[in-house]
Length: 470
Ligand SMILES: Cc1ncc(COP(=O)(O)O)c(C=O)c1O
Image (cartoon, rainbow, N blue to C red; front, side):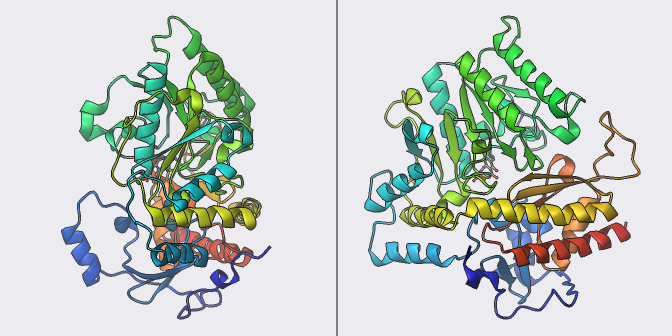
């Protein structure tokens, strides 16, 4: 299979990091200093990735100092085809050449119509034949907000069940669904009793201390009981919202049988199942949508990130029985980004034509294999997990006391050191999970086998340096 050969090459000025260890040093350049001085204290990525970027292509970004980095963050999983892929650039240029209105609210255009046909074309048939779509404000968070309003209106119920470790965005409604407590702490007012949290099937740290099929069985039993016990103390919710692979929560793939069980139990109870595919969608996990690994059909699918081909776009796709909200129930000025829709159509077609699902699966397996081999020498790599090209490694302290499942404690101090050592070697990775102890790999899906090997090599050197400097 050919995956955009031109993108396999670094940008022209690249150093040959495969043969010689290149170690970058990071100082406070004028751009970074001004950013720190003028931008909000809430800024996040620049604190861990202190780069001022100038140029990007495919897997590579270059900063203003002329240094090159392999980008395994890829816009937090947004850039399915990498930076500035030719089909995306061409689609955007075509919109401009055709003098399409760039701003259309939610009025239709040929580009929008084509985008909907392309998107519906990749939905599983059982959903496609029954699907409606709502265009949202351009962020994933807004699509989550829309999904909440949709299910609450249709069911007449107000509460929602969410999962520990879940991440659904940063607006105050979406935030109330989040497992992590830190961002919610200063906003006490949003912590109403409208959201009930449930244990996620985090196998390595099984919330029931069981792990494996026993943990899954208890988890499902707990949910079923909660929804059916008249004295559970929990109102029947409008919906259950879930990520089929938790991303920010630490790259935790939900067990396939568990997903099937959740679908069966929610369906029986008349509770809508919302699957948040904002990060895991569009071939990232080796299927077009991560829920497809379980062969289930959700009632609502929330999508963003890769859907806009690197431009902002977010939608909710849902089954018709939920379509009871009134005209204007969820509005927003910026729902008509034609360039994002054209780019999104280009991405969808490329994913299908180049079978990037299979490619993501194969490349993910290759990277996993590298990591497993590395694990033999580095017990700090506690758990290697994920699906397709959504992979993570939970770093642990091998000398710590074991938990109920016999696993050592997470090592949140090592993770930032590994991240920094990676950056010094020209590799951008992000952290996630509890206490930020999970190193995440989210490369563009067009990554080649050779590039996977390069990522693994740089990671191995960085890990060795981080462990040695403890
Ligand atoms: C699963 C999931 N849901 C929702 C969001 C929020 O999307 P956005 O940051 O575009 O608002 C994210 C962002 O990372 C996400 O990963």
